[in-house]
Length: 146
Image 1 (tube, rainbow, N blue to C red):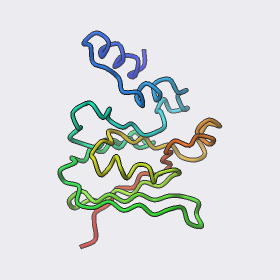
Image 2 (cartoon, rainbow, N blue to C red; image 1 turned 120 degrees about the vertical axis):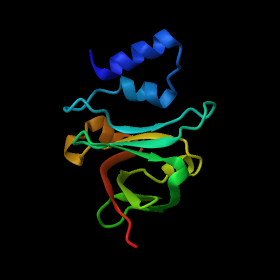
Image 3 (cartoon, helix red, strand yellow; image 1 turned 60 degrees about the vertical axis):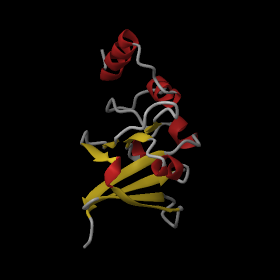
């Protein structure tokens, strides 16, 4: 049984509802490492989540508390054909690179973004490539310049 199946079963037993974006994510075919691609937003009628989880392709997971967000900046695709979304959390800077990231700014501003899962371009499925949903192929976390 996969972790997602286990979580879904526990949620069903405890009566916790799955948001539509989580259900879509769970229904999508898994990529070769077992990680799923995409972005999960919190359901608007649920309490705002206190942190943003970043799940990297190498299985590294970062958690950033929303109250520490000091700045967000979106840059549209340039010659590299990648949108860029930079988020500053205290002394750390998070850079998300991918496609269709402009729509994430509203979720960031309202602290409704729950989870971002990275998938390198070479591991994207044809469905990911054709999707209009946000796709993140690089998550970079570093110390902010002082």
